[in-house]
Length: 585
Image (cartoon, rainbow, N blue to C red; front, side, top):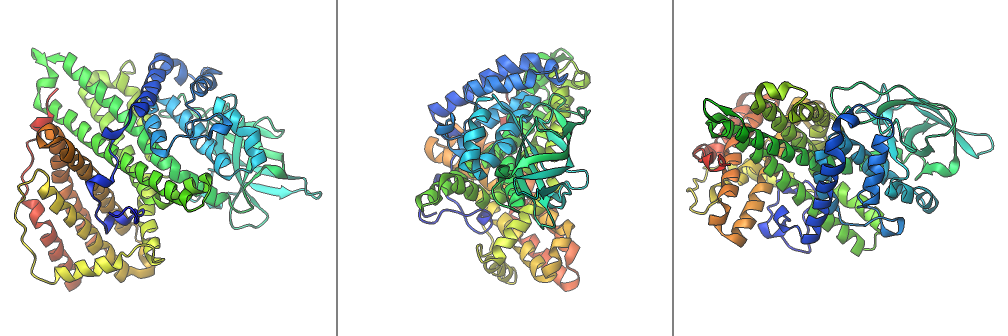
């Protein structure tokens, strides 16, 4: 990959990346590790000893913890130095988010404050607004919340009914409406509120101080998990907001919401990865200490398999998260060098990789669900007890497949965003898709097994990408404008894309490690790649088959299924790796 032609978001489907061109977690510097350790220490000292107090919503506790985090600089990692922040790059904020992801409900409050609470103001506020509020949010003196969702508008956020009416003298707007599921709602000092002016098609955003007259709150929601996260309904009854508190321009609110959600998605992926690592640690500790039939249960194959699978899935998500984080940093840098200011460049850089942000949100949340579910199973009866460490993790995990857009919405967005870019001419999907279609009409090439450690997986990866192109290309040609309504097809194409991106990410990470350290030093890493590829090859084949049979029939379906069989032929000859290499404590 040429330095002059950085890869674009979604382009992984049609373009190969060299191992040397990605960032891996092994490359974090000593400074990065110091930030990670600071986050670990904060969680260990300030959060974990007080989880029951946090979950009981002890008044004033969560704001005080956020303030302590602010004093350490943890609320201002992405904030410019002029407002008291550190101004670190994007992947560093992902690293901190990962390590603070061990904090259960605190992680939710932290993520909401530093992400959707603060970033709309930072990236879209004018100088006066930022001077007034950002330093307070950076220090933790003030806390922030984001008011978008309404009882009748969840995934369809732009259909919100909250209204903003301009006064006759033009000095203020009067806000009326109801917001729900507002994280940090019970203690936030500043709300970013989305409302519609007159008959506008799109939302407009406003900064509203929480002590404004006319704001009332419902009691705290009673939730399955994240019980320590304040979640309230917020009512606006003739709340007067100065015109100077409009955030950005009229009708720009929906764009703000979408761009901030892109950031939230990849950061959620980082946070749940931290939670997954915590779940693995607890699983390993318990498996070693727990004895049955005269030996540690960690010696039994069924338990070792569970531990190995926890590690494999988490390692894969980690590989994809930091690969995407560096891609975003590179995009931001390139945009700034072209003359764009940092705020605009950051938003644009993240937007460019919106498909990857959605992928990581889905993959991370589903990885965490797997890890904590198996953790409860490893703990057995103790895992179901509220006295265990994993019972809370199990309950807290479930929200992540709903947060930041449901995983179903994010799957469809992944495909939609890539196809839209193709239609705009930003990505050439149809050219490679037509090439693959032509290959399927010819005699298939028989590829011999490779003698290099990951050579077979490289061939399999090529097959994964061709499978996406065959299915997506045919679906676009067959369904045209109705494809957006064919959710079953879209969901299958999304899964093909998610698994392929994850597979390529872990393949590139381990190949880079082999190139620098040698294969002997990477035995476990190689086993992770081989096992992951072995497992998803069949999943990719099934999702592709399901998609084809959803829109094709007769000779067309038969030809595509034969092509799929050819693409999968090499994969089916790969033997299951000896993943007992991973079954060691």
